[in-house]
Image 1 (cartoon, rainbow, N blue to C red):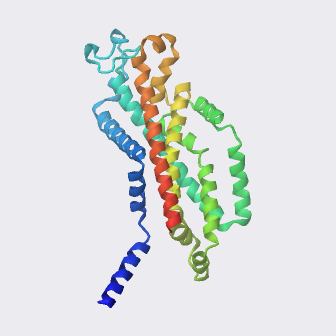
Image 2: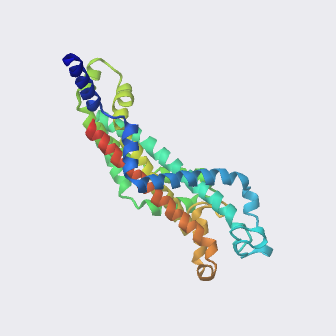
Length: 304
């Protein structure tokens, strides 16, 4: 009986000493933070509603000018959210514009994250003269007035679209991720498993992709999620100023831009208010959910 009790104690101790998986840590963090859970649910709901709802709207029909229906209030003539000064339905612009803003923010986040990971792993792994040269380039890019340069590029390009705009933004916003990956790669490069891999003759790219990258992936995922809100905000802000998407492409920034007209700002809030509130809800939901994921990542690192 005593041996059985000892065996049960040993198994219970082993269960207690087992490090929880990353998924369990994330679930536990979200259970503790009700606001983060609600924010994640709101963000997922917005994504599903926008991407499914936008399938029912045709871009040409939404952007077709119909001056006979200009400035219709919500509910008039069958327009759920009304129309703008050109008689274009605001509901269709809101759905397609939100979809465009999310796609642009996600695309810029993906491209900058991939570029930053590749550059950061290379300079963090090799160091030396490679580190010095590339870091000086990164320092130079980061001291530039990036928003002003993007505005200049958008102005100079004769005809641009969403793809062009994504690439223009992505050229400048990978440096922060590259710095983060470099710092983590430098610390991981001093560990024993990296030295053992080098001694065994493992190719450098396998060490970087199969050894270093998985150990820093959680930090990069959290940084990318939080960066999504920032990239969406940059696109919306530039479009609001008139230097983002072309005039014929809906965006949340184009709807908010209509509030620059004092008459619309004061007397026709239905034109710009839904887009403004949607931007606020999107930014808050991404940030609250992202901060919970960051705390889960920190907790996972402390637990090993």
